[in-house]
Amino acid sequence: MKRLLPLAAALAALLVASPSQAYWEYGHQTVAEIAWANITPRARAEIKRLLRQEKLLGTPQCKAGTLDDAAVWADCIKGIKDENGKQKFGYTNAWHFQDVNICSPFDVDSVCKDGNCVSAQIERDVKLLKNRHTPTKQRVEALVFLIHFVGDLHQPLHAGEKGDKGGNDVKAVYGTYAASRLNLHSIWDGYLAERAISTGPSLVHRYSLAERRRVAAGNVTDWSRESWAVARDVTYKTAIGGDPCGQTPTRVKLDNATIASLVPTVRLEVERGGLRLAKLLDEALG
Image 1 (tube, helix red, strand yellow):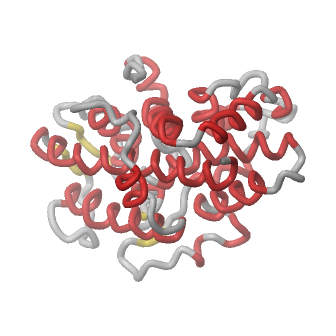
Image 2 (tube, one colour):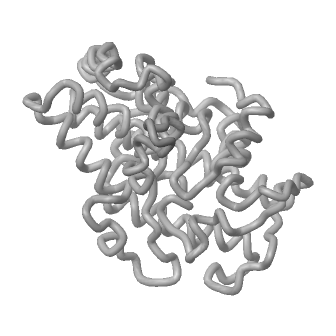
């Protein structure tokens, strides 16, 4: 288990929070570590082999040679600028989320035009990894994106929202913490995720075959719908204190009792992300 982010790093992450930035390092790395503990030896060997080729990515400022680095590489590259000072990998920003309206029937296809959403990219990455004729550079890139994007999909505010940039436009209070830039999205990305992961027994262990099959059942569309429903029935419902599609207050407050009640849900989402990533890695590489 990794330590919680130092306060300075957490605050820095908060200041740059956006709809395309999900779990902070602790969340993404925990999802990856759960997957690592539950994949086949053959998949582990192939992952190690591919990550040894990290130089092919051409991002020396963003490492990907270890599992922990690979888990956050897709967020790290957002800070790389081209010669004109623009995001070099800006075209990947929309790949981290899918803004499916929680107050309308579930419809992921309408927000995934041209493959620019997290579920479409997950499916694309699996296909690239399965094809042994895919150039090595593309396979390495597909691997590090896949490890990250499955974590993204299981942050509910990356699967469902209500026209507020995945909760980024919803100012919030977390317990007694009420910084001016704090919002609902950053709470679920970082503070709540870190609280949940560090509560109770470690989520990183070998799960039984029955548990793996139960949690990883279905496909990417099924998981998208499930995460979207969590956004509606848990994230927004608890934040608003009633109808999730009702008017959102100017500032929502998650008191300590509410935070404690959300811990099991967040732990389950991280567990789901890890075991489903394990399933996809085994299908692609094992």
